[in-house]
Length: 245
Image (cartoon, rainbow, N blue to C red; front, side, top):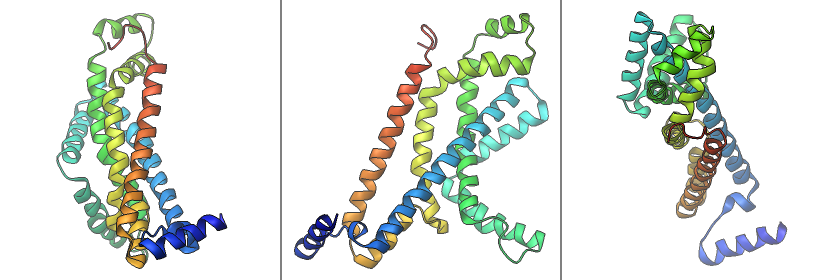
């Protein structure tokens, strides 16, 4: 490792190609922290958005009038506004309002929590529509057969409709979740120390913007590529022959 550090220092001195996060302890810590926060934002918002999508789709499936209208309003609001504007609304508008209402001396929620909440609701709105389309692809006769076996609507949804809808929805779901991972970079705007924020601090101190941008592009290409590959494997693993083809 010492030899690699010296080689990179020589490369930086001779050619100006500076990968300071490799040989500088402070920059390395900053970079690894950025990866950790990016992973946290991605995993938390993916799980949250899937839950939001499933709940919203279930509400629409059951046909609850008031709840369905609220779900439609939520979907339209979050699908038709930019995710960065949503993030600013939560952090700069709703955050101070909640702090004032509760009379707190500190913000009620941290910038990381607001980022996760905003990303979850943004992707969840698309997931509602993705799951809804998958549910509509399940033949009504299949639902009737499940109910004829003694399942109530909730059980039929959990055990029959949702598993089949998930298989149909996976390609679109994969696209949305890939977009969600990339959208985590918006958290930079409210000073969440994710990878883009950490990289910007590194290049502002070392003037190695070109090198750090290459690292960022390669990192997201690898992460998104690995995620897409894993989703493809999952899709093939749970595929039902003749269903959704």
